[in-house]
Amino acid sequence: MKKLILILILLIVNISYLDAQVTCSLTSKKDGMTSEELLRWSEERPLTIICGNEKATLSSFEFTVFTRKPLQTKSFGLGDQGGTSILAHEFLKNDVKEGDTIILKAITAVKADGVEIKIDTISTVVKAQ
View 1 (cartoon, rainbow, N blue to C red):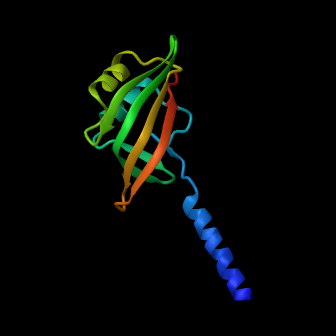
View 2: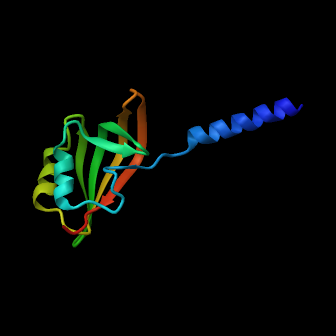
View 3: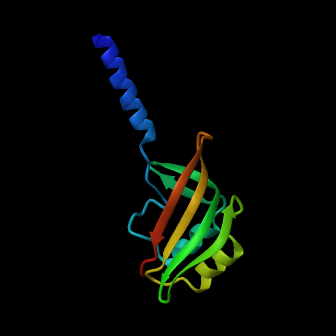
């Protein structure tokens, strides 16, 4: 009976571990990115994100920006292994402002070991230079 209880506990712990969400971000910096850093990130090939201590390559994602002045949400379409959309790149190059929030949604990425992962949302705030 004790062995059965121990096995059940181990199974529950392993299932909980598998379900734990690893935090992902665009870079290892957690306090936001400057507009220059965001532009450099968007020009990398392949686009990568950091999940825990690992890098993952983006396969597909939706690129959205939440601006404060004026208060609005702008969607710039889908990005893929080729990078961000032309509209998103132009926004990052010319129009992004401090305080804007860059949001990637519906993300599919591939870790270094080839495992595909799905992530709901990654966001970063544009900080001052």
